[in-house]
Amino acid sequence: MTSPISHRLAQLVALGRIGIGCTALAAPTVMTRPWIGEAAGSADARLLARTMGGRDLALGLGTLRALGVDDAEARSWVALAGMADAVDATVTLLAFRRQPRVTRWCILAATVGAAVVSFRVAVDLEAPDPGTTPPGTVPASE
Image 1 (spheres, rainbow, N blue to C red):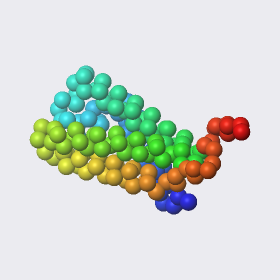
Image 2: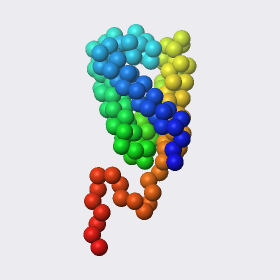
Image 3: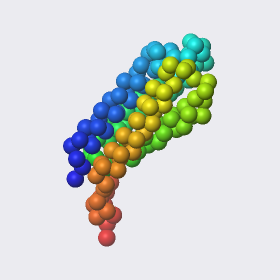
């Protein structure tokens, strides 16, 4: 059985992701300025921030929906969100010297932290029982 703490952490990470996604869609410069500095005000950077916001919004909403069904269904959503954060951390590290000195460590810590928490929670979420039929499927007739 999944621990209530893991379930709650998955919810909190999903809600945070939804908040980040909505902010990136509504005020893209707010989200990108700490990451890329003055370039955040360009039309191209705002466009990219909004597309990333859509990704985060979709991952957060999908995770919450899956958590409402059962933890086993949410497991892959949480792991995939962690993968997105791990990619963000990797590309942040690759561009580290070009990022604003004041915020680059915070951005790296946030992306690595989100990836670690997501992967850890995904491991803790209840795995599907191999002898059961997944929700929404019809068992095969014998």
